[in-house]
Amino acid sequence: MGLKEKEFLEKIEKHKGMIFKISKMYLENQEDREDLFQEIILQLWKSYQAFEGKSQFSTWLYRVSLNTAITFLKRDKKRTDKNELHENIDIEDEQNTDKELQTEFLYKAVQELNPIEKALIFLFLEGQNHKQISENMGITEVNARVKLNRTKEKLQQIIKNYGYEF
Image (cartoon, rainbow, N blue to C red; front, side, top):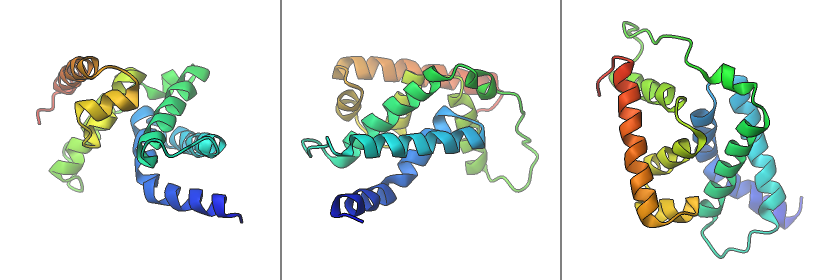
């Protein structure tokens, strides 16, 4: 294994949780999430040679991962049916803590957002500020703020429609 490959694998290992979160936000079905996860890794590897270090590795990784997820969904329209909410969450389940239940509702609600909205919410949940979101999305800071606020309102409405209040 070459130095470049080893360096890449170490960086991916460090950031694989973020890649998993993106996969989970974009796809509900476990098999589809695994496929997307692998596709993201493949696209990261293909474009790693071009990474020049002008931005932080994590910033570059966000961009490639989010663009891959969006392209992945566009490429296979059949996945749309699998992403629709078909199952109810059993609120009575004693194994779910409040936090787990909130997280599950959030992921279910996020499935209803469009790919751009999912990217905005993901970056927000990762703790990025408006400036960082604008850089990762390739939009102005004002546009990022407006789109994020609208998306958060939409997400709150979706969750409310499910009958769950945070």
